[in-house]
Image (tube, rainbow over the protein chains, first blue to last red):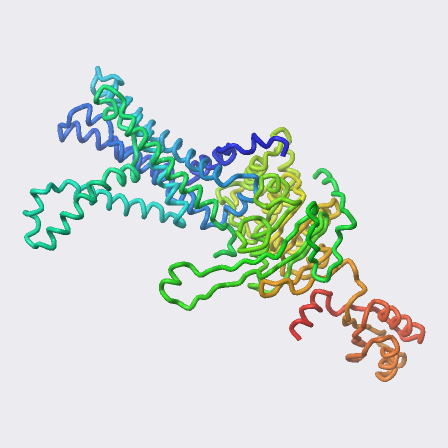
Length: 275
Length: 347
């Protein structure tokens, strides 16, 4: 009680440390990560050697395909597993605020997945420098680093939100489903008015398509930025000045996900009597 | 473990009402105050939508109880009586529909209260990858205990619950339930809590462990810790608790004071020396029993079963038998008080 300010911290260091340790002690973690790394590096080598892709494209793996496996591997069920297993009742008997629990889990997931992505980026950069002398870290490397880290922080927030709602590792399933839906919405949003008459000969179908396409156009960007939010440095600065709208959207999405997660956790009953 | 300072218990706060409810107005009540607590669990939304017959479960209904600081309160009742729900509400894990829980005048979810409570759940779902020592250390960190004394405190706690030192560095995933109970109890005692909530602390523990846990709890009680013990082990409750709350159908059915032994009828057996010549007749025993407000229920060779009204009638009965030179060998209680309560309830 005497050191109240110290104990009201948003991030609980003991919990942060134990979350990182939990992954380290997971026997499946190292082999899966090693296989993932080797696959992505192998893919880059094959792209350069056989597909003849441009060197700067082949040097780095896709931002999405580095961030997603890292976050999904570490973060699936980041809160839901604790809720389902009943660990939370012992944890919440300690002087820990529930918002602190949510924020600490999010930060630990973001930091750990970012670290994995940056390690892979460093390996890729070193491999590129060894294979193609003269290639040095440049704006493209920095852009990759920012994109990967921002996607890890963004995806982590999305996973934390879903995990606070759904039990066990169902958050991963929900995210995959939402991801597919958002891709579908994006595809539909690409339909131009002149194409509608070619797609549908039936009047009703045409009317439905005319009604759905504008909605999809409106929803495409918000859903995609919720499912996989990240900051693309090249896009942000392509006009010569920073696009603050994109920066604001990114941070507001993360903030919204975390606020929803905190609100849900604050109302959650953690006694097994409620089950 | 170092001494836990005994709290000052205000004598005026000691409960005198029949079911432990205290008149409102005791705002600075030192202890746990449960006031008109009600909790209903609704069926999951999917059940409701599917039109299934799963109905609401009334877990607690207008439940009131005061637990004075320094007291050991047992909570017993049949399965589904609402004991775990009560424990959940006491710890702030469940949101009651109405009523309130105050610990030292504050709601159980407030940080100052979390700093002075320890909790051992019935379902020991701990972080299975952690070693026993790491687990207790983790909770030492979480409860903001001083870093300088961390290692010593953790070792003292593991020693206090009698966990074999060879097991300290093994992952909890490899532990038996009995070993987990000991680690869980060590965890609950981190930070020398003022209030200790235990849900079936000796469940699955070997006989040696049961005795060790009982001894630890008795020591803690002697040092002034307030203990709320939810257990099906009547013997354990009787040996540790000052009072016991009987919960049934979400209500407080009765509150028994275990410190006061001069209450209730009970059965005893008196064993005589196996000498037929000295053995009293059935009629003689019946007469003696009647004269001491007791009743002879059965005579089985050299063992006579009596139902005595209270402690006075028991001592009078023994005195009369001895005075008449009957060869009394021993007096055996046939059931303890809580067993008797349940027998009477079932009857």
